[in-house]
Length: 98
Image (cartoon, rainbow, N blue to C red):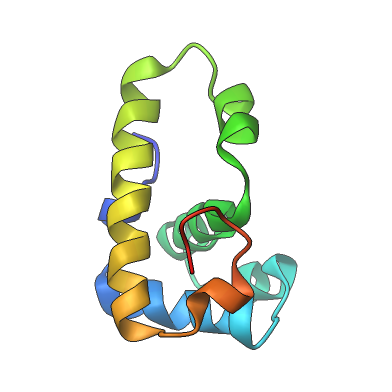
């Protein structure tokens, strides 16, 4: 099973997003701090938040069912994050994330 935003507990989602996009901790550094593969999956998935959709389509081409689920969960995660991190749009360069 691929990791998706819906697999990440909301508090961890907010914590990792703050570290990565606001405190500017690199993905590599965040991965080094992980204690297990599940945490690494969280970091890797969150790192995709600022990757444009066309690039994600290329990464997962041929996986239409997963992509539909992933993009739906990504939008939901962004809505949750906007409620917790009001200035998120300044840190993520995605359309509709202001």
